[in-house]
Image (cartoon, rainbow, N blue to C red):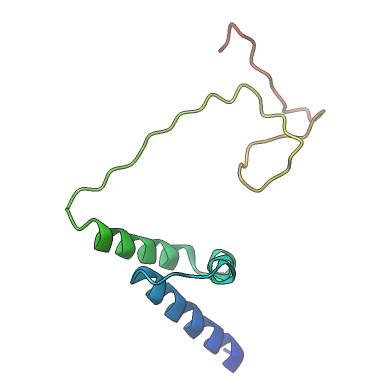
Amino acid sequence: MAISEAKSRTDLSVLLDSAAQGQRVSREEALRLFREADLLDLGRAADLRRAAMHPEAQVTFILDRNINYTNVCNVYCKFCAFYRRPGHEETYVLTREEL
């Protein structure tokens, strides 16, 4: 591993630790974590922060259901993985009866 790569990993580790301890991260630091941090490390840091803020032994979540009446999209964001471009052979639009 190159020295600069090792330093970069160390910097990420320090950034994850400080975020887990509740220190604010800048917009640039958050973007760096999003792009470069290992997903499991990011999850651990988030869970440590959650546990510090809510130490009770109960964790809850919200179950959110959305009916996707179509998978046609022309926005091309990175949010969903199921969209199809207009005209693609796998597009669908549910009818009112199907909804």
